[in-house]
Length: 422
Ligand SMILES: *[C@@H]1O[C@H](CO)[C@@H](O)[C@H](O)[C@H]1NC(C)=O
Ligand SMILES: *[C@@H]1O[C@H](CO)[C@@H](O)[C@H](O)[C@H]1NC(C)=O
Ligand SMILES: *[C@@H]1O[C@H](CO)[C@@H](O)[C@H](O)[C@H]1NC(C)=O
Image (cartoon, rainbow, N blue to C red; front, side, top):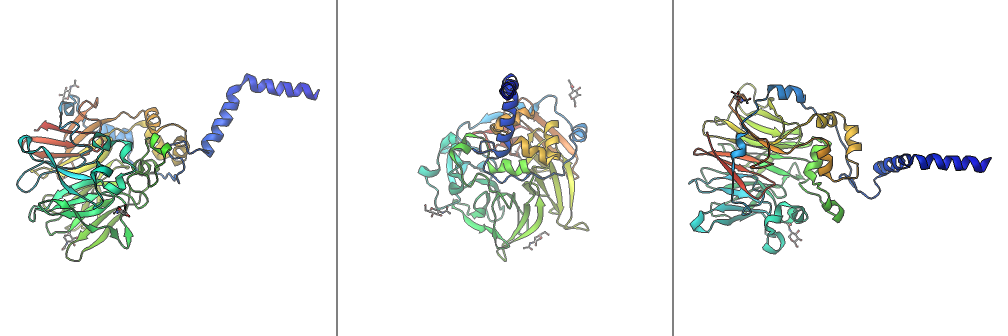
């Protein structure tokens, strides 16, 4: 009798091998004993985000059915590595670009040496340690990035000709018009280190507004093991996956040489741009897919308001000569992603599945393509250009408009795209 029932039980399991598999898989997912999931070995704490409904955003969004950004021309292919921010100096020379190998480089012209190193952000920068060429934008660089630096935001002071740099690891820095080794201005605020400086802008009174993306994370894994390198999981993804909101807007005042917290509790604050009349600034919150305004003057001084909800994840914001704002947007949000955003517990299970991040993202229906959008001073959309098939670039970081031309930077590709505009 006893023997028979054991046989029966075994048969049940044999006929339903997926039951065993399911039990094992569930156990595996929850325990994640080998730290195999993208969040493996990591204190992953997803929180709920305050993000506009996908449907509402899409109903009010102007698409670009001609996919005009797809006509962008890739230039300097494999000569610049992940040029996130692009800048021109006081005499219009450039572009200057902040690269994934830690350098700020400048374009001297075809017959004048091409790209030359203009500045580095640390004394420790060396060709041996940091220069990985086209591999600088791959996981091969991650381990070295904190030593080599990652200049993400660049701005020239139009009066002094000095270049201000927001470096992910070394904070707010400045280098003279001749370049060289940059000097740190703000590495700490309120006695604590700035972990993830991202972008900056210079007020006409000399104060510098800059973003610190997170109080908990820097840009890449502090410890990057072999396993983790196999999976596409850098800290800046965690900030978005968790939805954590510990980012800040900071201000550095040269007269007192101190940095101050202006806004905190932001969800991946990224680009920052002061308005032409200096009365407000715009900043992007990447995780919340939106552009925000912070008033610097007038009756609403010191307050914030929403400028626009976006169909994707914004990066830098740059002014054109008319005082309008170009926003670079990595597209796009999906319905599946919205469900995850609203349900932190679901994210906690989903991102513990033992698959590389790129598969998990694909399963969410995330297509990678780029959108750039022009807003006027009131926050109304003036123009939208999309590269729906990701022909010219799959990721955009910044748009600079000069003399009838758009220069488009990207943190992930080894090129700059240009496009005649308007
Ligand atoms: C594309 O957009 C333009 C202007 O927004 C509109 O006039 C045109 O009909 C649209 N074309 C298609 C094929 O939808
Ligand atoms: C530079 O390298 C030295 C020795 O390798 C190290 O001790 C130091 O912390 C590094 N400095 C920075 C700013 O990374
Ligand atoms: C510059 O102007 C900003 C905005 O009004 C202000 O917050 C800051 O304190 C000013 N900086 C200096 C050095 O006066």
